[in-house]
Length: 276
Image 1 (cartoon, rainbow, N blue to C red):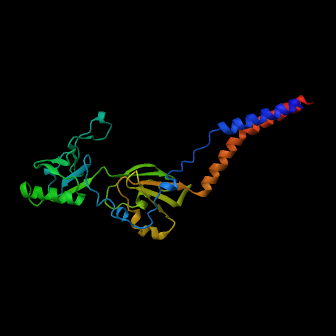
Image 2 (cartoon, rainbow, N blue to C red):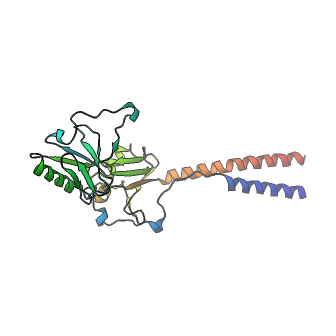
Image 3 (cartoon, rainbow, N blue to C red):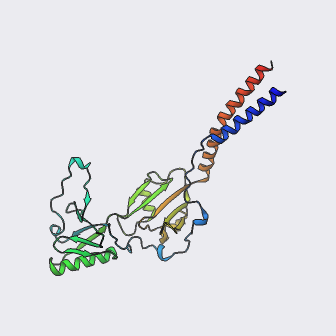
């Protein structure tokens, strides 16, 4: 009797040990703490579909500038050679950078908010939108240096991050003013089979008090929703669907129970052999 009790106690100890020590598969469900989520179901000033057109230039931003009338005044007519040691990518540093006549030259906004440009020197651009900076630079070149210049300006460091059930997670540049969520998903290879198309979160704004928009792509009207126009530093998270969650939970339970069943089976064999 004492042996029987000791065996049961030992068995229970092993079961507790197994259940307590087994590593569960991480579900990677992000941004789920409801107390910290504001669902911006109503269009707000920070979420009104303007995309990056109202983004105000800051120090350290990278500007790509070219003169569509005559590229040689803004960029080198001969493309910059890339050395083998650079790994195949042209480096951007200081106030200027490499580039070809087709792409434009890149210039970094300095800490004082100015950008140093050929022939006209430092121009204050911090606080301006892309269109405002473009117009200002065009005006200075037109007045002092060039005849009827057409300046094209892009901010090349604007990006969004997409995570979750997407084919290719990562950071993606915003190459135009109004890139929408559907375009980004297409660029990232599309949703996975585990994705919940009804639960796609767009997190934007101040990290200390972010705004979270929940998007339902199963609704065709979502395509006309201005909230899916992406802004700089947006984080898009695509959650798993219920079927995928249940499948992962079942797999976790199976993985957890397997060693416990092996221990139980071994204990029963030992118990049977002893009591023969």
